[in-house]
Image (cartoon, rainbow, N blue to C red; front, side):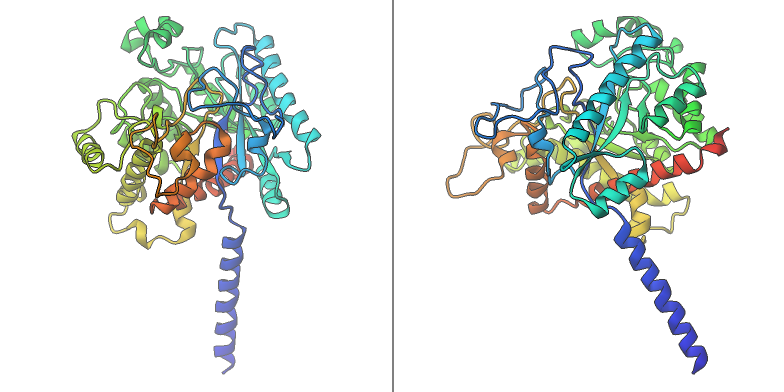
Length: 445
């Protein structure tokens, strides 16, 4: 009887600890990057994080490539993005290390000051522990710092440690042009080709990750900062993944597309996706349907989209294009869990909820990031006429015109039976990785 009591007590304690662990796990929508300070490097953008008069809101559409949409009203109590990553950028043409640092610091300080002035609704979290605290003890929108484009910023371990002290969680090493770290992807189109003209005409053998790029990735890891592979040219990304495999550094990819559906220089192949998860990293997708339309896709996906269009349930360029790529990526990852784990007997369905967190899929809005967003699905600018007998979500009628419509997108997808669990798990996975980098940075020294 005594033995039975001891065993029962131990089992109950284990169950309660497991339940407590699950309850502490974060499950909120997290935007992996937006740009509220684009006006600092590019002053023609309107200031981000300002409030408008609720009685006179700005007129915004999904076509806002060069227009500020990051109004504070939209991010306050946003049910579609409780955590937001504010990405600071340098100019693509910056040549001075001093100026590059100054421009980034100005943006970080702008965000810090905004949060301090509106502390009842916003807070900047500079550690993973601060994120967990505010999720549990407040209803504030939580802002995390990141940097998109490391040009002239990471020249030593001391530089990396400086950015870690500012609370920077990750740095997207490459952006729109080649740099001292390696080759950036050249997107199709005259403007983007001219922007990175030297890269566009450089021979394939000369493109890739440089030795300084490898050093930068390691310096960042030694400082507790994650490296984002987004915007890397295919050879650069291949080199980076090989180096991170060698050094056992988990990679992050915040807003490149699934190559099987959108096949361009920036897109990530299935093999690379598996490598990212094998290294305990994870991937997020861009959220704009306009950016996620099929390009040189695999025949399977071309035929699948055609059948959906013919059935009247897919509007290219709308939220449907995001839905299409997200579900395809989710299915690909879950179908290849055995390969990722190195055990063909393992299936995703049999994993515990704690284990499933490792295979999360994030999202990145990129608001104010030089792009338009999802078009409407319904109405004159959509694919289908308005049916007066139906009730529509705002995302269907307006498209993703501004951040305030993120919650509408998630509601719509939930109504349509889309499994949003991997997206909700991404907030916990990101925080876990941030904790891992900060707690284990000595292993890379």
